[in-house]
Structure formats: structure tokens, C-alpha cells
Image (spheres, rainbow, N blue to C red):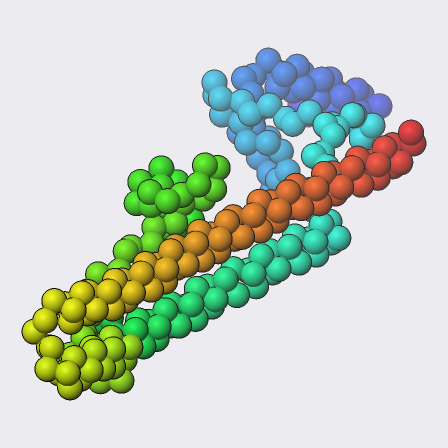
Length: 263
């Protein structure tokens, strides 16, 4: 015999079964809840992945009004970059000019040696690269140069080495060759080429040549030292200008930050 219930009883029975199902679902572990309530095929599952004993907590939303840490001041502005570029370009131009001056002085010094009749040894460098000398540790550079003044950057200028070409083998028109020929011809014409007067006169001539060479050496050392001092001063001034530009940029950034904060 089949019992027939009215629609109101059917609704009450369905509601009762739903309440029992919900209570049982709440008592299940989280992992089983995910299995007991599968997602329909093709539906988008936005629920967080959960496994037994490993539950990823949901991220806590950050309030929009939460205070943020202040950002560092952006003092590298366009004006600062332009100032730094100008300072570095001026220093580079000065150093390039200093290198050119050193090279020209070295060439002129070698020309003077040839005119004097002095033939330097092979590999002799009349004027070293001052910039490379300054880039070396100063104690090392000062050890190479005994003429460095106190407080001045040291530059190593190697002394000249070689000999006078008094016979004019390489340059018959040099001062040493012409002076030697003239002295010999003068005493030979008088028949006193082997006299003590010739030896004394020729010795005095050689002394004059050596003094001229010493004067050239002294001037060369001073030029190298002065050139190194000028480059070092330009580098120091450029560094001071860069530091001043940095302070100005930081001050502008601080003022801009204070103005933006309402101070």
C-alpha cells in the first residue's frame, strides 16, 4: 500500500533532510568537505586549495588608509644630472689637454736633446703620462720621485740616460758636433792640438754642454710636477663642485617633500 502525503508534508520532509545534511557537512573535515561538494564541470573554482593538515590562510586585506613608509628623497633630478655632466666633461677636457701638453713637451725635449747633440738611450721617455702617475697609489709614486714637494702629488720623471755625440755621427750639425769640430780646427791650425790649452778649452766646452743638459732636466722635472699639481687641483675642485651640486639637489628634494606633505 502506497501512502500519499500532501504537498505541505513533502516540503517539511525536504527541509528536514536539508538541515541534517548541513549538520553532517559541518562535522566533516575540511578536506572531505571539498570532496563532498565537488565543482561542476566547466565551472570556475575560486576557492583556496586546501589539503588535510595543510591549509593556506587567506591574505588579510590591507586598508587603503594604512600609513606607508616614507620613500627616500629622489635628489637625482635633471638639474643635478646636468651639473654633474658639465663638471665631469670640463674635467675630462682639462685632463685631455694636460695629456696633450705633456706629449708636446716630451717631443720638444727630444728635439732639444738632438739639437744639443745628446743621444738618449733606447726606450727613454721624455715625459711620462701624468694621469697614469696620479692614478697610482701616492706612496708608490712618491718613492719613484725624490723631487716631490711636501703636500704635492708625486710624479716620476726618469732621469735622462745616454751620451753626447761629439763626433757628429748621428747629427753633424748639433751643438756638440759643431763645437767639437770648431775647437779642434782652431787648435789644429795653431799646431797645439795636443797641448794642455786644448784639453782645458775642450773640457770647458764639455762642461757647458753638461750644464745645458742639467738645465733641460731641471725644467723637465718642474714641468712634470707642475702639470701633475694642476691636474690634481682640477680633480679636487671638480669633486667639491659635485658635492655642492649633490647638497643642492638634496635640499631641493627635501623642500619639495615638505611642501607635498603640507608643511
